[in-house]
Length: 440
Ligand code: HEM
Image (cartoon, rainbow, N blue to C red):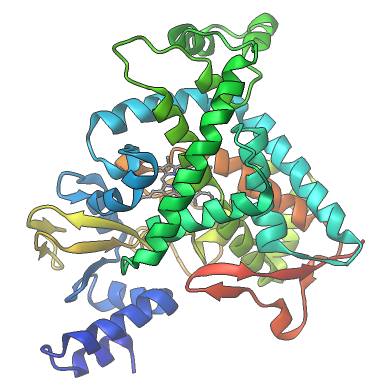
């Protein structure tokens, strides 16, 4: 029986059984559930959530922040880093913080970041080579962004274990604790307190260090708009992102205090580890599952053709994306897909699951969505969400993820281990363990 048949067979007044059917689909089998929804109930109002599954409707939800807000993140994020761009719509936080953060993560850094990610990945793969296998989730896919958090963002943490814990506890509460379990929330707040204490000390060190970074924010920004000469290139700050922020003097009427600098260092950790690890793991799995595609991607990797290689990576991710959906809170009654046969009014106070994962399989927009194709236009992909909260680290992840996958594919004889040992172990839809084999 399909999910919708099971749902419809339960009397409407039996809310908890109906919700259980949908919960089961959302958490354990979202691709099947959303396939049914795209075909027969594209905007599905249940007693607990509203599920939105088609490409244009997901984009509509994510472009109407006055109706579909990120209010749900506030209670989880504020105790850890205060009001921030992801937990406030159309606010001074979103406007100011996004501008400042984009300026300290310039596109000019990308080739350096890609190289750093490649070197870290190689070191991890080299270390495991003697055993002929590697546990991808922790020893590679999390290890690389955690090391980058130190080497590039400037937040190395006291040790790896603590970094893993800070990252996991905060992510678990902010993005996965839909039942608002207080234990999960407390662990996240505790990690936030520990990070603030650690980063306050580190900030003093960063400030004490003499760096090449120009100290006035506008002078610092200006260098990116000067015509490129060898001399100008040398002026670009070599420091890590924390050093850039720590040594930038903001004019008095631009409120970006020490507390906000520390908050953003926490945001870098929270946003850059778990998601990166998850997608690297899932992409490697998806490529290994398709031997012919794997060989083509490998050929692009061997030819050092990153432009082609990266297309394999993002297409592979479409088949098991980072997040099936992003969550929004409906602020006022809103008629979605108005004027179409599926037009539906979403009542105020609904929790809306806008399925970016499902949207990438909407055949009205994405041609032959069940086929693996590297010829899709970029707009077909919503891996990094859409609209005013599109990922600020999209360009960083955009080079780190493919480079780590590339270095892994380049290992001779990369393959699944036989039987269950070779399967990705998932907790919900998050990979917890995945061991792959390769030759020395
Ligand atoms: C593969 C890795 C990553 C994935 C899959 C990813 C995915 C996402 C997604 C889906 C959102 C939107 C959430 C929503 O709409 O509710 C988002 C937002 C965000 N991401 Fe990422 N992200 C990744 C890496 C990073 C990195 C490296 C950074 C660090 C700079 C970062 C910083 C952020 C921030 C600050 C936001 C909030 C933007 C806003 O509200 O305007 N992410 N990310």
